Each structure stands twice: as structure tokens, then as C-alpha cells.
Image (tube, rainbow over all chains, first blue to last red; front, side):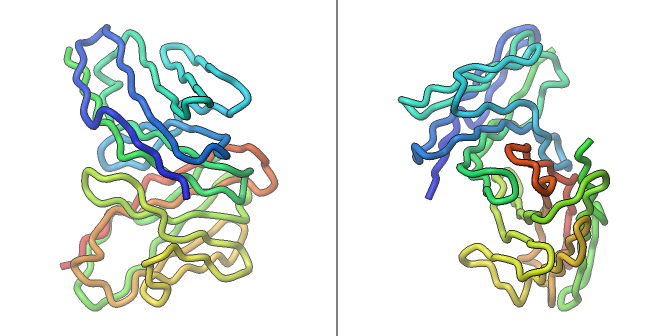
Length: 114
Length: 117
């Protein structure tokens, strides 16, 4: 089955700096890679996702890059703000809607220091 | 769009009792829903896949008789923790995908914090 490794487990940055979280996956057949943000006591919220047919995707301050050859993908948050503080999970899966199961990384606790 | 509602958000029950958690897709139909469990400071672990009109598929190590799943309609799945014990205390989260929406992201509910005393 799929195995997803996520690093670092904790990350502290100064407000305005960038944050980068990296994940590697084991199953070369995986083709969908979402990132979720989880605030304390809440469920995960999808913040960005990428499919294996693209190498990079950007949405305002958030970007994700994918290297299929190396089987790793990364989340980049620029101009961090205190409200970006949360736990971030990467995930990987193969399949299509209704039939796929996500394998999650262990999470990264991001703290943005004002 | 694609809102998943979970109820209750918090529940405290006594050891030996059963607790039911509801997961609803509010603005879409979901043939398939997923139930996850999350321990403090840990990742999400898939417990089971809930299929409308058929039996749920449980992950290895998850007791199907303890965690009863019913997916009675295209917008509702329920998880019942039977004969709950303190070790069942956890954060339970459901997720759903719109039926037939290929390549649609997975949307999560806000979770249910279960505390068994």
C-alpha cells in the first residue's frame, strides 16, 4: 500500500516569511495529492491539491509542487500570517472520486510568530 | 458547495453505553463516505468506507461489531460506537465525495470529539 512521509513535524516561522512542508510517497501509481489544513478541534480543510499531470499549482499565497520522478511533493506558503498557524497534512492516493482512499502524512504543526 | 456536516461536535458518555455520530452531505449526494479516527497530535486513520445501500468496508484491525456503520441514504451515514470504553475516546471525522464527481476532492466534516468516562 501507499506510504506517505511528511517533514518537518513542527515548523516555526516569523510572520511574513515563507514556510515549506515536504512529503514523499511510495506508490508510483498515486496520481492525486491534496493538502489539508486542520485547526484545533476542527476537521481538515482542503487548501490545495495537485494531480500527477501537472508539476505546480498556485493559489494566491499557497503553492504546491510535484516531482513524480522523485515521488515527492511540497507545500509552499508565502508571506505567512498568524492565521496560517495550524496543522497541515499532505496525502496521496490513486483512483477516482468515490473509490479512492487517502493515505495521510503525519502532519506538520506550523506556528507563525507575529 | 460540498459541505459535510457532522453531529454532534462533542459527546461525553459513560462506559458501556453506545453513541451515534451522524455525517451528512448538505448540498450533494454521496454514494461513498469515509470514517476516520484521529488521536491527539496524530494523523487521520481510515476506519471504514461507508457505501450507500450496502455493507461498509472496514480497515484491518477495526472491529465491525463495535463500530457500526449505516449509510441509509445518499446524504447520511452514521457511525455507532457500541459498548464504548475509555480507549474509544478519540476524534472521529467523516468525509464524503459527490456521487459521480470524478476527480472531486474529499470534503471533511468538523469532527466529533468522543469522551468515554
